[in-house]
Length: 398
Image (cartoon, rainbow, N blue to C red; front, side):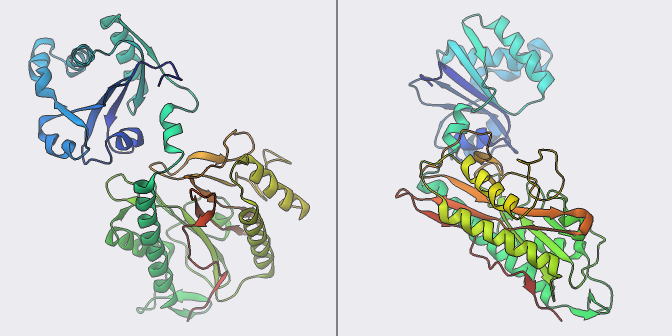
């Protein structure tokens, strides 16, 4: 805080998808809250009185709205918004927060603008600031301590189980006229597979915060296409299966992708798959602590360009070939620091967790290939995959 010239900070908003609030409250099961911290003082969590017990599990000092007579403020001003402004003013006064104050969390942009402007008027002893690029919390998230790593490892192991159970479900089906069919003779669809994956996700104590990708043929060639639920599973068609659940209740994420074909793989897919595996293995071999993360994006572009594929370095607007960056940090956010892309200054350090996910995409030729592991850097500078699932292209069925 001192390095960034911040005398205090506030984190506000509903807890759902609010990684900053979840980080500071150690994942306490609250619906919303306010965290305030004065430099060189312990943080304080303010919640509604009904959530005081859950808030106590955060390990922070807890206060409730009752400590600030919020119910009386609502009566006095006839507005929750105006009451909350006065409560925030009282919080600042009680905890002696003055000077430059940073605001973080989640809220409606327009309402936040009005709130911050009104707070500036109500509390002339503070100067409100924000951080448009790498925030103090982004910096904190970038490395994981032992507790965080154990949480991520647990999610990784359970995600592995979800992938295993889903593939086993697919393999149990028969083949008729080149298509997979269920016991009643109807076709097995992408929607059927996703339902099984979602059931497994819930059974393993995980949740879909941002969905999943199970995409066939043309859709597999568009990296963030989620897949069409009505598509029928067919032999020889490429499938990109990207799972990125998190621990239930807003915890840590895991991210993994496998590409496969049922029964056999067309030569063009096998060739692209071999090239992606080559790039993946080369990157993993060369990962080094202290190196710029963007170096490995350049390395991947070197590999694919030498194979005559377009890349976003050779053509930033390309929609085929290698069309995305190599990877991203994983934690309470599915996309975090470090960013393995050329334009970011991030450096690989012990304690980081990030993905390595090279891919090649040709939607007009009805295929795409991506292989993704989540990687952890230990304190000795060694790199470990948290994604032991096999990288076989062909899955035998029928």
